[in-house]
Length: 195
Image (cartoon, rainbow, N blue to C red; front, side, top):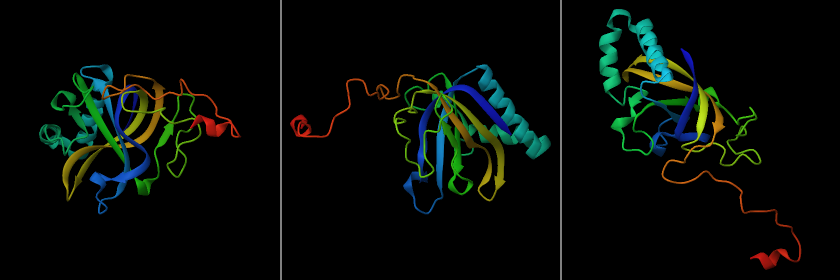
């Protein structure tokens, strides 16, 4: 079931070139990101309702029982309480992690003006470096679904769309990258003097 997160902070984003889980070549490549929303907020409540609806559609009367176990297991659930993590910016937040596997094609990643940030090969378009980084605010669309297969039961989210909204304090104490203090360098006889 698709849901739009109108505003969240992004963390652990892999939006350019897809990577394997823990760089293990035996696992499929994927794009991914974690979206942080304030605990108790309207969007956090909407996400939990979507999760409940998806679980009920999949498991009917057993959904409540299964969800208790799934939501308590960070490996089975895409939706976790950020207070249980030691990461910068996670306290007081709920975290929704979504992935998109390479065989499904890249997720749509847009700038605030809806122009694309990444080319099909995962490289950045000219001038798009630093537009999305851990800590900036984004709008996102994910598809939440129930997993029930040989790996077990779980609640997962597939990454569909990420759109940059605005700057935020970068996680880890940094600031967003900008070109402030730089100017164009002309080629020619004086260019060697700059080195």
